[in-house]
Length: 483
Image (cartoon, rainbow, N blue to C red; front, side, top):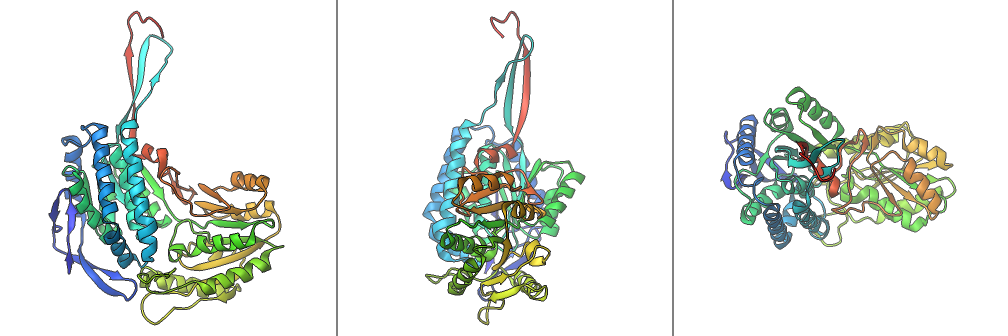
C-alpha cells in the first residue's frame, strides 16, 4: 500500500512521486511504501512555513488560542492511543505495551504541558542607569527545522513540536526514514485540531537529501536534531555554512550506571537491567557502562546474568514480551559486530551474544563481565541489548573513569548514603543524574547532554528557550516620577 505525506492542512504526494519502503522489524517485510521527499520538497515545505509565519494567523493569534489547539491535539492523540501505539510497534518493533501505556501517554502529557506554557511566555521590565523604560520581548524565532530519530519517533516528535508551537513558530519536520508512520498519522490529527495551514510541514525522506537540504536552507531560522553524534556534527557544519542558524542537538551517550558497595543489590540489578535493555537497548541514555564496586561485583554479576536469561524476547504485539527486534538489518549487524569485538578483546560473554529465532532482527539479551575501559564495548555507543559490567574500587576512581567518556548524557547512581549520592551527582559531567532510579522522565524535567552528547536542553521551561529570540526595547522617559 502507498502512504501519503501530509504537508500543512492538505494532503499531497511529494513532487517526484518517488517512494521508499518502511519495514516490519519482526520479519523484514515491507509495511508500506512512503513518499520520498527531496530538496525540492524541502523548498516547498519551507516556503509554506515561511508564508505561515510571515503572513498567517499562528504567531498573531493569542497565546490562549494556540494553547487550545495544542490541547485539542493532545485530546485527539489520547483518543487514538491504540491506533498510534499499533503503528509505533509495527514500525519500530518496540513492545506494544510500552508504546500504548508509556510512550503515547507521555506524548499527550508533554503537549498539555506546553499548551499550559503558551500564554505564560513573557519578557521583563529592567531598570537602567538613566531615564529609560527598558523591556525585553520574547519573540518566536521563525521557521524551525526539526529532524527526529527512529528509536522513539512519536515521543521525539512531541519533544520537538510542543515547545516550538507553543512559542508561535512554524515548522518543517523530517521523520526518520526507518519510522515515518506515527508522525504522518498524527499530522492528520493536527488538521482536525485546527492547526492553520502551513504551520507544521512533515517530510519523510533520507538524511543525505531531505535532511541536508533542510539544514542548509537559508530560510530556516533554527534547527533541532536528535540522533547520532556524527550526524550532529554534520548538521552543525551545514548550519554554519548556510545562514549560521542556531542548533539544538540531543546526541549519543555511553551512560555510566554506578553501583556502590552499600546499594540495595536487588533493586540495582533490576534498574541496571532496565537502564540497558529498555527499548531493545536502542536508547541514547542507556546505562551501558555498569560500574559495580568490587565488594559486591560477584553477587551483582550473577543476579544480572540471571535477570537477562529471564528476559522475554519475542513478538512485540504479544502480551508479556519485554524485548522486540532491533530496528533493521543495519543495526542488527552493527550490534553483532560489537559483540564479536567484546569477545575478541577478552571480555567474558556471560549470556546471549547471538540471534534470537530465525526471522527478524532479534538479538538475545547479552551480558559481558570483566570489561575494561579501553574495550570498544565500553567506549562506543552500541545501541543494542549488550550490558557491559565493570569493576571499581573507590569513588575517586569511578568518577575519573565515568567522566573519561567523550559522551555526557546521563548517569545512574545507586547508594543508600546521601553523601555518596550527592558527591557523585556533582562530580559526574552529564546532563542528568538519576539517583536510585533510571529513565525517570517528565515533561517538566530538562534533558540534554554535556560534551559530545549535544548542546541545549529539551523539555521543561528550558525547552522554550530554543524557540525564542530576546529583543531589548529602550524608550526615553520625560520627567519620570521614579526610575
